[in-house]
Image 1 (cartoon, rainbow, N blue to C red):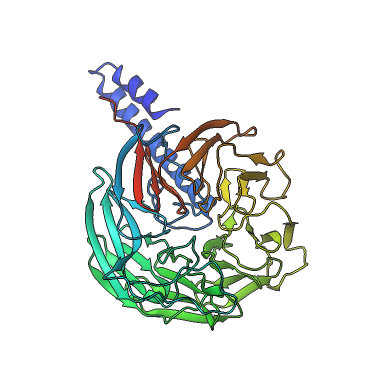
Image 2 (cartoon, rainbow, N blue to C red):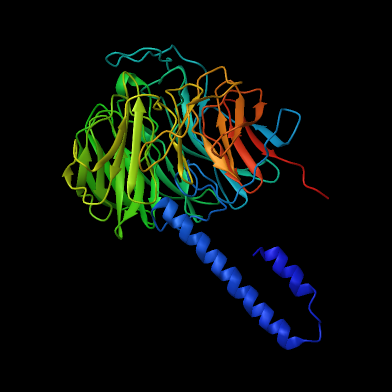
Length: 473
């Protein structure tokens, strides 16, 4: 029963019949509370946690359910530089950090070159290729931007230094996305530190975790993750690798566990299984699950390949899916029930895939369908999460002519895929996945979109866009 229809019926009641009005109000309140309770339960099941992130926010880079879906958003289908752009603002510096949205603000991170250009310093890591030299000191900044006007509310410089690595030519020095609990903003700049700010931009605490040395000096990218009062950070690089847990209120280190891993760029995932939260990290040697309370490793599973960038997703029913693509392609579906120790090659692996898997982008898990891109290309696969069974042949997303680094997102029965050439393809979220629109903007996009209410936020190399239809008067 729609709440609007119930309200219309209520308005038609005889105004003098107070008893009837009272009963109808009571029933409406009961119905509304039941609807809210049901939605909350579905949201928690989809995420597999008891995160308090409101479903009408986008508090982390994969959204309120950590799967790329905005359950209450209804953004536009069509836009261009002259259509359905509420505002477009130039951003200082550069960053592939995805925007997050909470309340009236959008939060983004950036690395801003300062001062005069200096003699170029080139990366010297073993196997380095396609890297850019360092020519400037950089300020590492967090920004809050008004959703209504696009004006910068505040900008906080958190560190200024000469970067020790230039990174890949397609990357950035600010690729880790922030996360918020609605009270504080948590910012991870990797080698430039971990920070907690209030939503007015005031620094509350900070941590220096040292210096990362990434594979081929290609840069850093794993984002922090919040679960209740615990902040999780993955520190995988060519030196000693670790997984950290901090008290979000004080910055106190709760635990730190060593990881037998080299560089990975994936973001951890926290899920709740059988009443206990665990942290899942996807990386080259193993996908691993850790007890969130203690950091104790619960299980591990080999099967992925080098250079893990894509982050895992959870189907809400006990199955975690992790995949990547570099020299080879791989994807694993892991049953968490009775997963203990090394589960490689056991029946805890529900299914495996060795083709069509994603490299930079992460999968989208929308209702009962898993969507993911082939490597960095415009080929979209659709699977049944529990079995790995294909739902039709892979789809070519016509209109995209460049690599795709952004992760696909979903809302209002639609899927949005944004590429580096400024194109966003919109398709239906159903069994046919028919095309709805091909939209073009004059910028290049590597950051993943954020979807909130009737808005879509796209962070490009130069601009931040708020895509929204004009308000009806």
